[in-house]
Every structure is written in C-alpha cells, then in structure tokens.
Length: 466
Image (cartoon, rainbow, N blue to C red; front, side, top):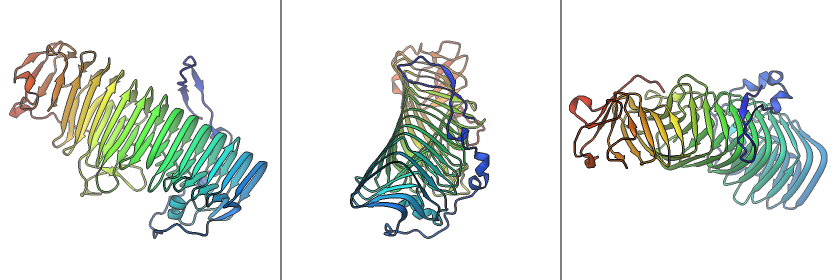
C-alpha cells in the first residue's frame, strides 16, 4: 500500500490522506516472477538506430487516431503502437496491453524495442484517458529523436519486469505527462526516465510508485521538470542523475528507500554542470545510513528553496570519490573503480530549515550557503581522509552547531557571528582564506569559539560509510 503522504497543492489546505496507485489494483505478488528478473547488460551495443521495430499497430509517415479500443501485443520485442517518421497520432480511452520480453536490453533502452507505445523520428502523439499495462519487462511510453513529442494526460500505467519505465525518453525526445498514476515493480524501472544521449521529461499533478531495486522516481539523463508529484521509490532514490543533467522539482513530496534522496554522479569521466533545483519540496529517506543528497565523481550545483530533507541518518549531504554500480544497488568504492575523482558540490539554501550533517570523503568538497531566513542545525566533517567545506551565512540565517566543524572559506554577513549558536563547539576556519576574521578567536553564543586552524585542528573526522 502506498504510504500516507502530504499533498502539496498550494490552492488546497494541507492534509494527510492515503494515496493509491496502480499496484493497489494489480497486486505485485501476481507478477513476482517478472519483478525478480535481473537485467543483462553484458551484450553488444548497436551504434545506429535499427529500422525493423515491430508493432501490432503502426502509424508511419501519416496521421492516425483511435478511441475506445483495446490494443494488445504479446510477442517479444514488439510494441503495441509505433508512431514514426514525422507521423502524428491522437488516442483517447484506449487500453494498451503488452506482454513479451525485450531480448536485448540495449535496443529496448536506446530505441524503444518492446515498449508499449513507441513514438520516434520527429513524430508527435497525444493521449488522454489511456490505460497501459505491461508485463515481462516493457517500457510504457517511449519517445525517441529530436522533435519527437508525446503528451499524455489523465492516464494509468502499470508495469512488471525490468527496464519498465513509465515515461521514457531518449535521443533528445520529449514527453509531457499530467494527472498520471504510475507503478513499476521490476528492477531498474524508474517512473520517469531519460536515456542516452538525453531525454526531456515534464510531469505534473501525478502519483508514482517504483518498487524494484535501482528504480527511482526520476532518472535524469537530459532534463527532468516535475511539479506536484507525490512518489515512493522503495528501493531507489527520488532522483538518479548521470553526468551534466538538470533536475527541477517544485511542490513535490517524495520518499526514497535506497541510496539517498538524490544520487547524482558521473558513470565515467567526472562531468561538470549538473544542476538540482528543489522548491517547496520535501524528500524523505527511509534507510538508517541514507543521506538526503549524495554526489559522486561529479561537479554540481544545487539550489534549495523552502525545501525539507527528512533523513533517518541525520546526514543531509554526502560528497564522495565514488559512483553507482551497474545494478544501481550500492555505492561503488575504490576497489570497484580507482579512476574516479572527488565530488565538488555547491549548495545554495534559501527559506529552508535543515537539520543534519555534511559529510565529504577523499578530497571532496561541499560549499554550503544559507540565505533568506534559512536555518541549519548540524555540523560538517570528513568521512575518510581529507575533505573541504565552505560555509556562508547571511544576516537573516542561523547555524546551530552540533559538533566541532572545520571550514576553509567561512563568510558571515554578521561580523559579530551572533547568528551562530555553538552549544560549546568550536568552529575552526582557515585564516589565510577567511581573512576578514584576521586570525582572531571570536567567542560564539553558547560558549564555543571561532578559531583559526592550527596543526592540531586541521580537520574533524568521524566514521561514516556511504
């Protein structure tokens, strides 16, 4: 059963209600065998788009429409509907039923083989009030190619089996979704997903539930733009992002059960330019060691406005010399890949109240800026070896310290530092960087001090595994 959640529509009073999704109708236990299938990516990659995509219904280089019908496909590697080559299609009140396996997960991922609805090559399609049910491992709506656009509203999507994403865009394709209920039960089956070389997903006023390992609410490879989404990812994060991608969530309430609220990384060479925007949004992480935001082998910027990170771990942010394994089930360590680089993340917080710690590893960096009436209760420390932290506060924001913390570039709009409540802890700063403090020791509210770094206080290290 989908957990109770807070619906965050601004025109309505906040209320705790029970959210239902398609798994309350089609029980995941009925398709247990599908949902334990492990995707096999140890297969040859095809470098060009195949021309023999099979479908039981095809709209090729023309216009088409249908309503109040049931369309099916049961063969492997076969779509129910293919709209291709500058075609357009309009469908309403259609039941799409798809079974049959994707025998090659590369062709399924990069060209939509076996997807229930495949729209490709500068085609457009509009759907409303459709019901899509897929089994054995099939994407539901797939968009491929520049100028390919799918619009789907008021629809119900259920899937079982691996790589069964709800909305799935690749090759610079675009999908707009509104008023959707989405459930995926298989491994690596995110609710809303992009793929190489990039997909553009816009979704609003929707409910999403992903149950399988490695299945996120949003997989950003390209662009994710979400508004008013309530979601649960039982065995994945809210957001996966690989490389220099952008994910923007507004007015969302999302729960993650594995890895972190966000897992942003580069799967090969460290990229720069990744962006995360959270506005009026809450993330909840269920695991005892899960951070709110995790970054590995990546240079990224994050912007949090009126955001909440609710973590059992007490960890707000992790930056690490690491990445995610192929199965998206754990963080790879040095033994898995020793050719990575430290993460560097700069996080700007406005109008937010945050509680928890910042943890960086192996030369990683976290920049933490509080402004516009924000509060932070927590500390920063290295999980392993050296790490670097910068902290900035404006005059309207406060920091309540929970442990000694060492920073490099420390800035504060209040030279008196009266917006820091120390509880007896010490803030160590680098006097060669934070020159405005002139190397002085300054007494803080609560009995602690801001002191220049000495040889015996160069860093604070604790034990933390991520």
